[in-house]
Image (cartoon, rainbow, N blue to C red; front, top):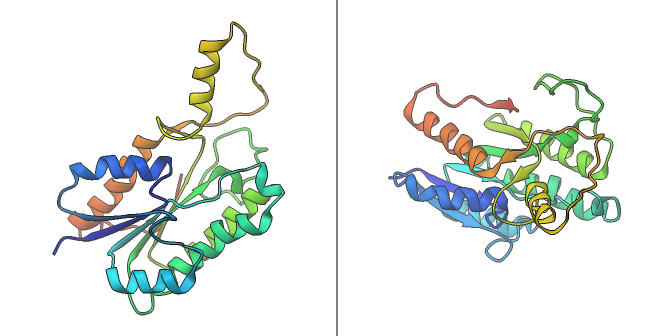
Length: 215
């Protein structure tokens, strides 16, 4: 039987990249869900779905990512970024699987003058960062979790910094952009490749699955 991979948040940038890339991984059975297929905030619906489908891997790409708006609606940010993680892990005592959770550099203060390491102490300053950090803590409470922190995700889909700059560059002769922020733009296809490589290695090698935090 083919290993089954559930991708949540399938309509987001990373979810769409994984969907497009899945056609090259024919030895796996993929399930793609977003809010129309499965409401991740509904704990019982999530439990029923997972117990019926019995995935071998769950890749959680679902997230509340409106950084500024999160300050106005913290309950929604924590609901999607933390409570949803709890829901996805609610069946693991009955149906264990390997869990890949996507997080963010916003769980740090942003005051470092070098790239963050996996061992650096989280210190979120925004509601968004705090909600994502709470989701991390829940995810890491499950021993079969691979937690991936990424930053400044961009792709052909949705809205992102790279697309905005390219659009404005075509419309204006002069751009004004903040210069006090440093980030690492991450191409969604590259991140999707990394996610599928992690799964592929786990399937191909006896000791290939290595839970933990990865930047």
